Image 1 (cartoon, rainbow, N blue to C red):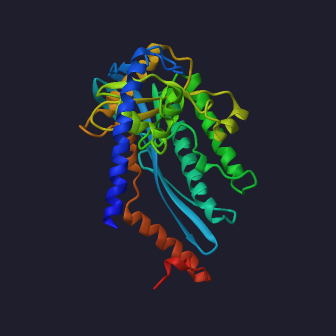
Image 2: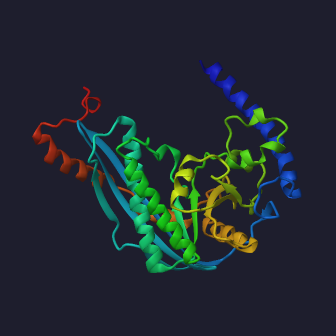
Image 3: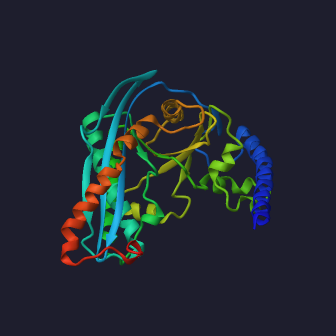
Length: 346
């Protein structure tokens, strides 16, 4: 059994060595500016750190549970506002206390619909707080913990009872997009552990061996290319990828999005997704430089500090979870409703 594990691991490491060699060739092409599809003329860049700016970030913590015939989730949402002038010189919470929301589905959900219901509910809570923060703080930057669009796994089928909720979620995003574009606020999604391969798709015509790219993502590949304090040019995403959610979004307005990767320390590159708003090349560099600045505070971890602070505020404690579960049990179980069988196994 263990020899089989070692054999597969050895095969994977050999493949990584081959990918490393391929990455060197692609890096040369990036430096030469010979890969088509990038927005900025200089495709491989040194980060120009930008030390001044105002930024808000939001996040949520949640748990979900099911009883027989009842699905519910409990969401805790929080946000932060940071002001930087070389260093952090001002900090405020968007809410004095986090917002708590208990939600039960009004419809009977299929098993595969429950994660979508929870994700849609959580995102709507985050966007509602983000919009309030935009209005109250008028920041230069607004950050979402995750992608700047909902993910394909969040999209219900057209005939699902959740489809109306999904359409409402898209309109929440559109409300944010319109406000940011109208008020010159740079909206970015910061993807902590991205699995995207949009850079690889962009550059695929420059790969001599496309078979090597199976089961690898941008982050792993670009980690062989990017050095500390470097990044790649922004490039278009979604519109070039036959993205179903992006296509759904077009009924509400024409929006375009870019992606880039920055590497500020020994951590993997961080994926940034940006709502495009006719930015100049210098502004695009400033955006990457500011996000790099507020993400560069540890030797081997890269993520914006404002989002980490929002995450810390939004974490549900075990005590909070237990209180909600006990309240639900005391209200529901007396009516003959039981926990699912898998939770009652002896």
